[in-house]
Image (cartoon, rainbow, N blue to C red):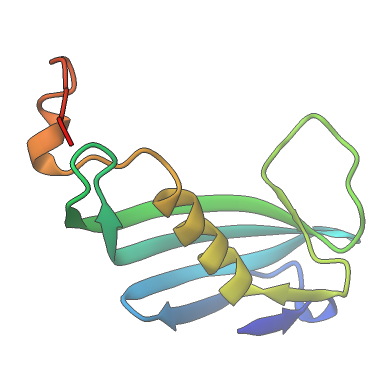
Length: 125
């Protein structure tokens, strides 16, 4: 789902997007000439691999997203929650995929291993 940067006004523009088992619903509103604020909720289920035992498990996703979207290069250290779309098109699918990849690349533990994090863990291969 792509939305032209210039089509977003100061009034909130609602959107919904589905990707497999992930659902994102939110709004976009222009903050300034080159800035749009995005408030959204991502929900659904992901299949993740436990980093400790390697088993796959289902992860329920329910995260709020608050981003500033810009159509120009942002050189600031004030906020790391800035997404740049230099072509003037806001790509909701890209933002959703980025959030999914961020969750998949973090340290995810299944329910069996999450309770045993304080114990020593050693496996012989």
